[in-house]
Amino acid sequence: MSEKPKLSQVLTHGRYATSFDAESAEEVYDPRKEALVRSMLTEIGEDPEREGLRRTPLRVAKAMDFLTSGYSLSAEEILKGAIFKEDVKEMVVVRDIEFYSMCEHHMLPFFGHAHVGYLPNGKVVGLSKVARVVDVFARRLQVQERLTNQVADALMEHLGAHGVAVVMEASHTCMMMRGVQKQRSTTVSSAMRGAFDEDHRTRAEFMSFIKP
Ligand code: ZN
Image 1 (cartoon, rainbow, N blue to C red):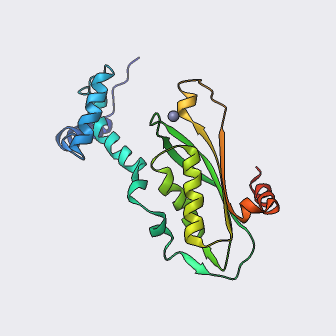
Image 2 (tube, helix red, strand yellow):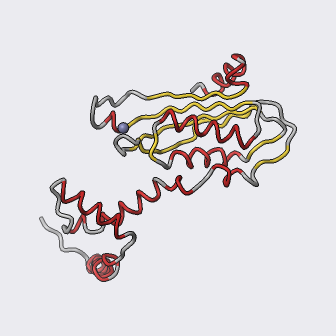
Image 3 (cartoon, rainbow, N blue to C red):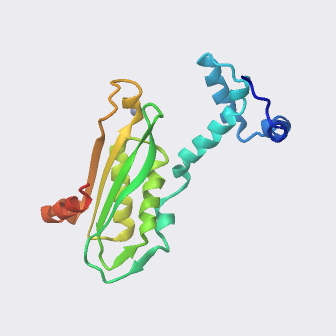
């Protein structure tokens, strides 16, 4: 049984198709990146001119710019103006900060959660900024170990804290979808600075906070 489409559906579809063909398909965002994506599509045996792929080079170029936007940002920019004097001595922990990055070996996503702790030394930082610092370094081509260390070092440098701890747990799609094809394994990395490195009790306290 075939159903005739309703008139409203035809009209909506018609309007969409018109704007798609006449305007959006003409849109150019970054000609060089788009040409590279088009070549890649051809190389893998695809037809970049088929309808479903016509705007793919444009979308990929935009997505890549977003996923690597961390290169044009710095932790310093994000943290300046967000650090406040406060007489707090107790550990501050922000857990389960979602992050998405791309491995530099395969340019495939790895993603998971970051847990960040610090021991204030007369200054505290807006909590959302901690998450943004994670993004600044995650939105680059990375290896998880370096990412973890960069977040710790940036916070240590700009917060002037007694110590900083960062633990990251991630799933790597380059391991899940290719290579050893292990879907359930996660990778945990940590970077301990100052008191978290020197004092096992401080480290243990942090670890107890981030336990699931
Ligand atoms: Zn990889």
